[in-house]
Image 1 (cartoon, rainbow, N blue to C red):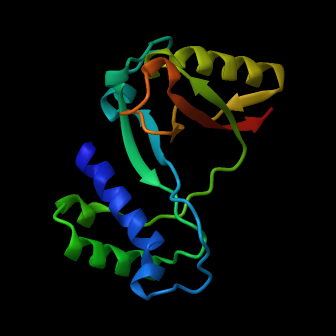
Image 2 (tube, rainbow, N blue to C red):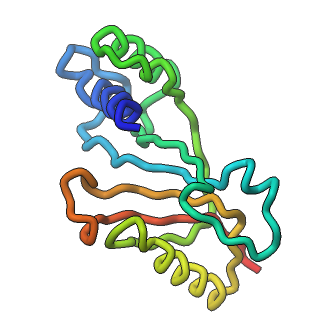
Length: 169
């Protein structure tokens, strides 16, 4: 995963630094590169064999990592940036990066502080919030936004925004 994260940051900083290389995209503004995010869902094998009441573990998840881009970044700009970054970096995973639009809709989210191993406690609070406010979680898929660098923080001080889609009942 480290090489994939390196590729994503390389692409993101490629866009951020374009003006320093003499290319200013239309609509560009100074910004800070957005944090790394992961979308977590259950593996196909778990879903196929799942029975009501089954509990899942970390091994039952698959993920997709990403970094949000500013609104001025078009598909064309993203692709030309990837070509430039691929020429400058020796990371073969740059070629696997895709540019997608995501619309989440109504969500419940909270800041989890602490080890990833204790996220279940925060999800339980989020589920209780949903029950109290007539909301229903739409799927086991959830998003995590990693605030700060987990390689540099103590596990009890990690900050992660947890988010999942809901609908009103």
